[in-house]
Image (tube, rainbow, N blue to C red; front, side, top):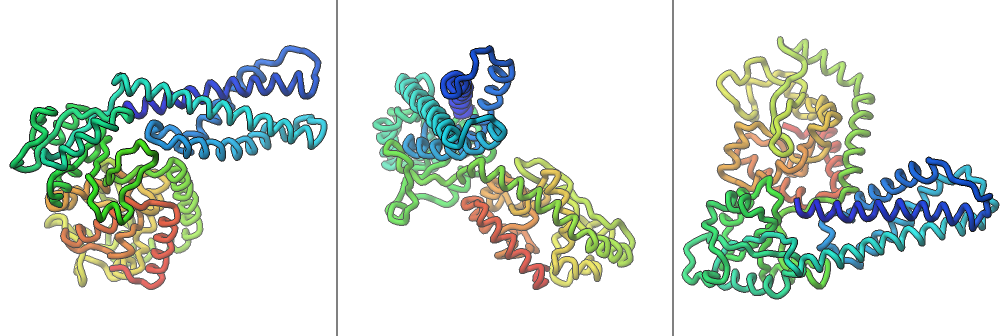
Amino acid sequence: MRRQLIGIFFAVSDFLLAYGGWVSFYWIRRFYLYNYEAQSGTLWEYLWAPLIVGGYWTLLYAIGGSYKDPIRQSILHEVLNRGWLTLLGSLALFFLAFLDDPIPNYRMYRTTLILYIFLQASLSWLSLIFLRLVMLKILRRRLFRFPTIIVGAGQNALSVWKELSRHGESLGYDIVGFVTAEEETKPLLRGKVRHLGSLSDLERIAMRRGAHHIVIATETLDEKVLQTVLAHINGLPVEVHLTPALRDVLGGGVRVGSPLDIPWVTITPASPSPWYELVKRLMDLFISVFALILLAPVMVVIAVLVRLSSPGPIIFRQERIGKNGRPFIIYKFRTMYIDAEKEGPALSREGDPRITPIGRWLRKTRLDELPQFWNVIKGNMSLVGPRPERKFFIDQIIQRAPEYKQLLKVRPGITSLGMVKFGYASSVSEMIERMKYDLIYLANRSLMLDLKILLYTVLRVLQARGK
């Protein structure tokens, strides 16, 4: 919540300065550049129009990622980012606001545009630099902190403690204590920072302390330790970091955005930019609506075939688990005989007698998934994302692979990297194997990767390589 509050402070400052900048620009333009007669402006000119413009710039900077953890962003990167956003935003604003404006000539129009770009950019940079300086001063006085928990108590943990003690204050890191992952032969942190408990209590400790960061600094990185940490912090707004090994440094796994950053390996997937989320959602809606219209005749034919193949409904409905663990109803063309799971939930397999003849063809071509475009329009699903599963199987997966919970942080998809690389799963073990590809997708999400997955999915459909 604290990061969101900082972002809100930056957004409010940008809004107020953009509002004042537009009023100042209008006043300069009206009485100095064009020499209009001195007459009072309307309520629209001095109130409503600046409010709209202020909101416009705040939204634009938000989509550009300016308010996402602003303290840790490189100030040089953000200055350049805002410069481009201001240039493009001003061009769009002028095209809409002054298309029918009685500007005397092109030269005057260009002068007016340059003046506004300079004014808005200057105010935006002023807001950024001033608030960064204010926040750094607040952090140094320890008025605003980010609770940090260290996992481990040996030499690596001691090194992390020293690093944060030297350089962490300016970034707001506040070491609230450490937890032990195993029996430490030499608990070097004891006496320097509070011992909060064991790794099995991490979720309770993180919630109680309001942790923002967890640093795994055990002497040897056990995969089980990493799985346990990720399972415990699932759903919590916590970043998990590792102390880097030499291979991480040489392999480029250690990245810093500014000279003040702590050189850690961050293993919790970074949230994609708001641009990605916005464009991905628009792409989901556009493609889904277009697909439903274009494929309507095909879906009518499939519906008739399903109806003729066996008694039962045309559309199969089933509860699946979606983003943040929320259940939703998924839609598919029915491919099994009714009462196929009268003996309990079971995954399909090769030669499954429960599948109807037309159902086998639908599964091979994956055309049974077409009704899920409606799930995408409703917002339950995306075109690309980890396949949604039933709670019955998710519970079994989590017992063996707790990191599966990471997949519940995003919308499930009609197709996924796991579906392209692995395909349908016939057992929990195969689900876990497919999960690895979906975790890779989660860490590398981008519009280009989404488009590639969609193209490969279309190829799989044409080749009828489903199961």
